[in-house]
Image (cartoon, rainbow, N blue to C red; front, side, top):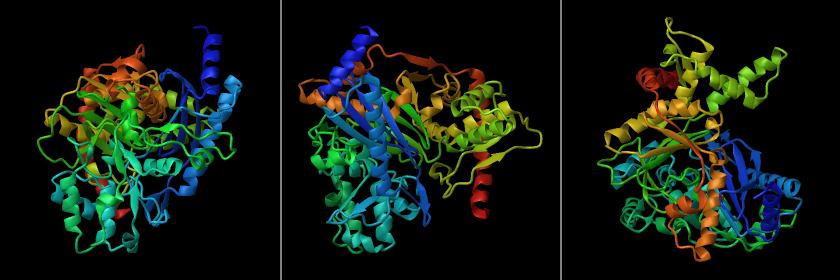
Length: 538
């Protein structure tokens, strides 16, 4: 197909509404992604930068900023479509919403928000998470919605008596667009434990919880508070007129598009890397960093480092979730960029990252004895209730720019690797590990270091930079395809309809990197005592 033919085909698909829209609300960016009838064909993207706020010691985003950001990202997409194809976006065949998993959004019977959004980044739910882990016999992480709810019960927060509905950020946006209080099973698995046999909340554990709070919150019926669970491919409502106006206040967008179940960023990352089958896994690196490994069998015991969640199709997954990813690395890159500008030689942001990442390739395999802790927020796997970013070295370490940057990149993977060690001890085996996120935009650097950290080959797809917004657009297209009679499970749809012909760049672990990172991780683990002291004293 010539470029003109491709342009004409895209224009026709847009005009006839045969496209799918994915919207993902990430930690620092809200992104809209438009795909064509071929789900691998990204037609346009639009984005909006935003930041969380630390208000009254709570990490949060305002709901007003949610809609300002979604509208800005959608408007940018519409403008880009008009610029590229000379047509106006007025309808979609399918729409999907994805967002940061976990956290706590609480509403009363009138649909009014009761308390500020408590995001995944908060680590104030320790007593609740510990009590629930013991009660359920399942690891309940601090950021899960049930931990936030139970902490509110334990703390006798007044809003508990007014509760009518709790959900995640993706579930909230979907509710406003469709009027339906539903959630994809992957995102729901970060609210409350899922029964693998039913792909729904574990009924026995729901009953245990209601029994636990029968005296302290006698009117609380947990099952009634939670969104209905759906799996990938099921229709999850239609875009209403009110929802269309929320997405596009100009009034140009028509209602009627089918919506797929709203999902979390972990699930869309799995879709975006074609890793929803057993023995596959992926690493997503952004503000947070996490690994998702699809399991062949149940784990032998409970581990606080591992969350049991699911794929968007409901298959069990072990998740290693770290609250801190590439934000501290980005802060250092910003400082080096400012130095370049102050010296009279300004450098574009992407070029700064590229230069620094490539410099890291010349560093010592163990980063020269340097250590970097990227903990801007608390890090449960490391036992840290708050964040204190640190750069540490001994007098005999080798301080060079190359070693400094390698230490910073290793630091992004530090806590993740502690969790992956636990998976290895469980005997979990992987055939393929995929990676996506902005950290991997500079080809061959972070990917190589991750391969060394995991001692496993790491693959990056051509579409990896589009990330979860593309992943949820693909899930939307899967729902539309299922409704039209396509009889494929999610893994089959990805392999046969989405990733056919896709190029993956695979990097095998370099034994020198493996040994060097192992030395770094031993020092990193020992040095966590310094991090804990910093939290206690600074």
